[in-house]
Structure formats: C-alpha cells, structure tokens
Length: 344
Ligand SMILES: [Zn+2]
Image (cartoon, rainbow, N blue to C red; front, side):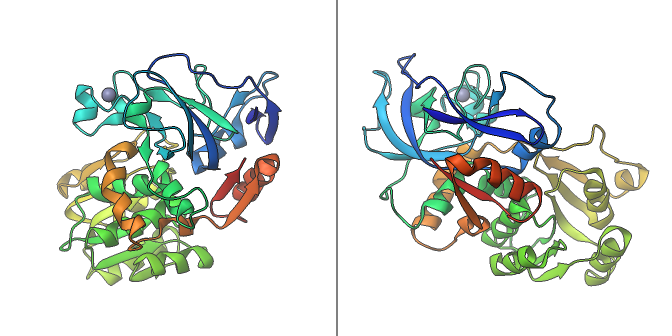
C-alpha cells in the first residue's frame, strides 16, 4: 500500500510500504477514508534531521473496518470508525479514569512499527478500546467534523475542560490555529459567554467568531495583553486557553489570567520551562492542560456533531489526495491552509 514517509525537514514522500496485516487477536485493519495533517506534524516537517529510511507519519484518521481479530467485539467489517491519536485498551485503570493517553497497553501511531494515519490503511492495535463506530455513510458530509474527533477538537475541548470553563467563567483563547479555534468552540459548548480570542489571521479569527468568540484581539505581545486587561476591567479572565505552544504565548497567558484563575495549555509545548514567577504565585493561578485523552471525549462530543449542533470540521480549509500530501504540508507550514484533509 501507499503511505506518507517523512525523510527529514521539508521532505515528505508517498512510498510503497508493506500492507498491514492482523498480528494480534486484538487488532483491526482499517482502510483510511480521510486522514489529516496536524500542527504537531509540522514540528518534524520543520526540524527533523535527514533520514534515508524515513519514518511513517500521521495520527488522525477515520476509515472502514476491513478485518477484525478474534478478540475484537462490537464492530463489523464495513463499519465506519474514527481513531483517537493515541491507541488504548480503554479498560485499564488509567483508561477508566479517562486518561487513555496513559494507557498501560496503549501507544502512538507511526512509531515502533505501528502504522501512521496518512496512508491507505492502518493496523489498529487494541481496536476494541481504540475505535469508535460512526453511524454515517462513507460519503457523509459530516466526515470532516467526525475526523476532527481524532485529535484537534478533543484537544481544544481538553483545554477548556481542564480549565474548568463553565457559564460563569470568562475565557481568553491564545492562538487562532485549528486547536485554538477548536478551544473557542469548546468553551462556547461549555457555556462561556465571554470568549476573547487572541489571533491576528483575519480569516481564522472570523471562524473563531463563528465558533463563539465575542472579542478578537489582533495585537500581539504586550499590546495584546493590555487589550485583554482593558476588556476585563484590568483583571484578566478566569480561564486562559493557551493553544500555540511557544514561550511568548504562555507568558501572555500568565499576563492575562485573573487572580484565582486557570491557565490551560495544549498542543505540544516547545519550551522546557514554564515562567511561573512570584506574581503568578501571589495570584493563586493554576496551570493545567496537557496531552488530550481524545478517546475520553469522543462519545460525549459525537452526538453534537451528528445532530448538527456543532461543526468542528470547519477548521479544514483544504483537501489533498494522498499523492499530493507533500503540498498539504507545504501549505500548512506556509500558513496558506489552516488544516488539511488527506484522501488516500
Ligand atoms: Zn488503558
């Protein structure tokens, strides 16, 4: 089959790889219908050292069950399913606590011999716990929103959820990438009435407003911080959702959080230390967030998508065939595209 291989920074290729086969009785084989490119895929795209052999890539996909191991129940061949970006048994103690990213029998896609999502098919380990059946047809218009359940929307949701967003909290979202916009949509769904979005790409913040942002702040740095403070009587907001992953963003987060408030960060931080200085201590600010256990949120979010109450798939603004996946990476890295669907 054909799959995406990254050979180093800027070097994405589609190559022939061995067809996936059932290896464990808990496996399933899924033919990929739609995959997508993640902001975190852009980190190796920008910085990976050259590799002759290359590495598989991609951790967001939905597709059709083609085969099932004997210990996988609850699915049939032909089912449309979505996979979260970490596979897990969904039964161990961590999974039972809603922390499937720490599953004792789980792991990551596209590493240690596990297929990546950006290919024609995937062997899914721990399939019964990992996969969620989607009650729509393969050609449903809902597919992009359902695909967003694999990572980007639950990641935004995790950010808002761990920050304790509710109808009484004011919220600042830092970042107008696909995760930031998903965090806006999540905060709205959790009832927040004041959602301030910090971002300077007009087309993206327009979608943020559609998703529920009440204020948009395009200014960056100190100027942006001042604007949030102006809008909140000098106090800042109860929740700050940091969805960029760079040091200036987490610095801004602590500068706009209200005393007693919560900073939540998602999206693979690219800094080693968090600047929680004496003023943060004096403000009783909590830091939370982390990698999103997407699997924990899928069943909760699915009905809203199926019944049309939310459309998180609007973050996808481009679609490419698998053969053109390199162009999808290029477009996302150049910020021509917000988030790209890949169709094998
Ligand atoms: Zn588990």
